[in-house]
Image 1: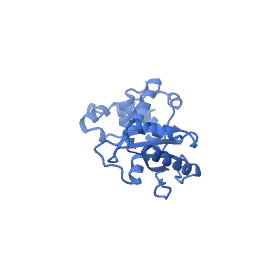
Image 2 (image 1 turned 90 degrees about the vertical axis):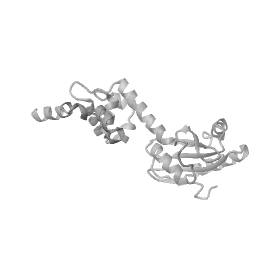
Image 3 (image 1 turned 90 degrees about the horizontal axis):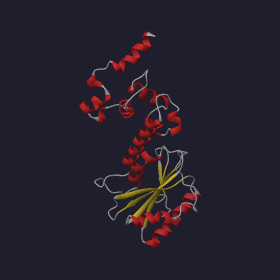
Image 4 (image 1 turned 45 degrees about the vertical axis):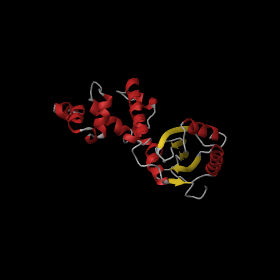
Length: 232
């Protein structure tokens, strides 16, 4: 009992200036741990634990921050100390992080190589458990001016229709498009369906005057460019 009480009092007895919110103000968010940042989002804990301890428990339950970000709403609200509001706030925070990672600021370097696309999108797509077909829309200088998830689920040429891809490209006045999708298996090797979709989209792009620059498949930290593979 004494040990448990001591552990529970560790955070409660931390000086005012060393608590997560105060530490953020004092040293900046970049110097805070995942647990501290999550504790700030949670704001409050339970009757028997602080927000910091609740954050520790969540990260331990789902192994790490990435695991927690993939948790469903139902999984979160089943946990003691996490109600509807906290679950919604965490979903919103993680989604903002994904969006910020996925779309570069205009000041960043333009897309020149498939590696640039992979570096940009692996953090967003590699962890997903379903296939997401995403388009990056570029201007004449190859800066990304927009991003759109066209479809979620197993890819099929009848579902990933050129109309949806190039409707968005035209709406954004894009000069070119890069398509990509993830393989939840972690293996980015293109399937026959992937190759067929690529040919269809490339031909459609030629008709409307918007080039399909590449189709990149994202795996677990790896990627395959169908342009580099000779399918363009």
